[in-house]
Amino acid sequence: MNKIPENFTLANGVQIPVIGLGTWQSAEGDSAAGAVKTALLRGYRHIDTAAIYGNEKSVGRGIRESGISRKEIFVTSKLWNSDRGYESAFAAFEKTLADLGLDYLDLYLIHWPANSRQFDKWKQINLDTWRAVTELYQAGRIRAIGVSNFLPHHLEPLLETQVPPMVDQIEFHPGFMQKRTADYCRDHGILVEAWSPLGTGKLLKNPLLNDLAERYGVSAARLCIRWCLQNGALPLPKSVTESRICENIDLDGFEITPEDMRRINEMGYAGGSGLDPDTVDF
Picture (cartoon, rainbow, N blue to C red):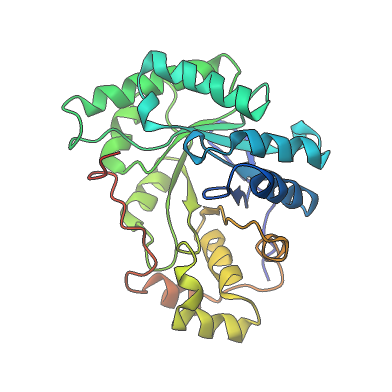
């Protein structure tokens, strides 16, 4: 049985822990702070947040209250759409650092691409934003940089820049693999991170996944997270419940067979958010 490695290696050599705690929809205050603190004390070393989540202050509080050394923790945040552009990106980054109470970020992502539905010059907007993020990286303020929700045609212009994206965080789970984007990323040395690896909880009631989980003696959640890892994607499961936080990182006791991986990979559409980076209007 293959033991889950502790880290993936990004294109620039930075090590990133293979499972992160997602904090989307974790409310600002004790809920988010408590989840982060619990996760770190239970073995997580990777925390994922974003400016738009509205919980960066609580995430930073949870990190401090854990007592774990900052150097041991991989922290990701994201630049929101209203802060796209060269000058705006710098200001947004400084606010994120201040809210988190940190001196640097391990990973900073552009949260959504500007798209052609919203902007005639969407490519240039993305490039201007990327230029700012790249300069922050080159100045040592960020250890690694990337994007989120970018499809291949959004990624292509960035691949021609001095520092290409190292990560693309996309919706990725059984029933919505985004195979074309995931394959494109892997072909270009970009790590795929999986947001909503449990399909916002919808997959926990899926008959096939529950049948397979029962045979492996695990929960459907653990099955989905292990499936992500066996597909080479880094899962970011979200929970504020201590038992589930612990369960979601306990993945070494089983391995999904190639036949069962194929069955899950071939599932029909399920658990998707319905958000399309080319048509969102926010």
